[in-house]
Image 1: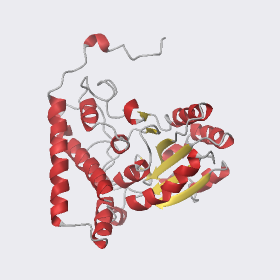
Image 2: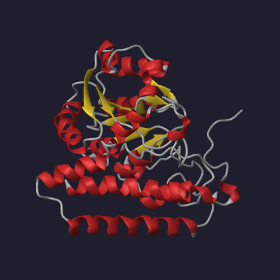
Image 3: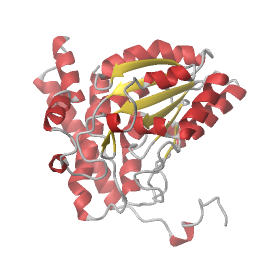
Image 4: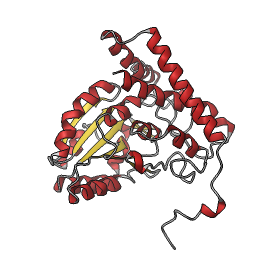
Length: 317
């Protein structure tokens, strides 16, 4: 439990520092912060190995770190530095780290879904017991590529975990204004997938529920769709609080922010006698040191050489 709390705290403090420093105009890429959604990323990644794959969306920082990505690699990437995880050429929305099994993120909604299914298909063909976790938002289910990929994954019983982090909003539009009133899991059911809905802010529950399900994926029992109900605390894109815009009701904001995953985890640890002031200080000090060192490293690292700008472009006109 302590390790899961540490991972969530590390993600939270990292993104808070990104938000704090973003106005300095040295991170020349958009950032989509997942403050409030840390439990989903950490819970899903808990029982994934380095050999398992994960792909993500534009809101990928938490997934990358939870999967074992380098903190220095993330921060250096945001600053466009050569030792960033994508060699400074991807920015916040295009993270990749094959050593950690993080096979990429993209700014296109649903863009990594077929990539993830392709990875799972390759694992199956090679008879390798790898799982691919595809992290998406609720809006990705409105894309045709989700349905094509879900159909293929279900037909071939691929080892795919579809993880839909349902934070209710696609940019500024509520789920009720985009989809009919029915559970998201009904969509997965229509494609013949096993499915379940969990509290996306309860990291321990997510990890516990997923452990046997991931075993079944490795045994060839076919894909699983997981809906994690959660909420982002900040604006869709950027480091600010957007309460003043009025598209999210005050009561809704207060209700969800009271369910902060770090607070939930703290209460669970207190109930088990695992929380103390000394533990809290130890975690905060450790994370603060790591985050500050990562930013210091990034700010003092070199930019890529101009000659490398076209080195990773694979498409031609």
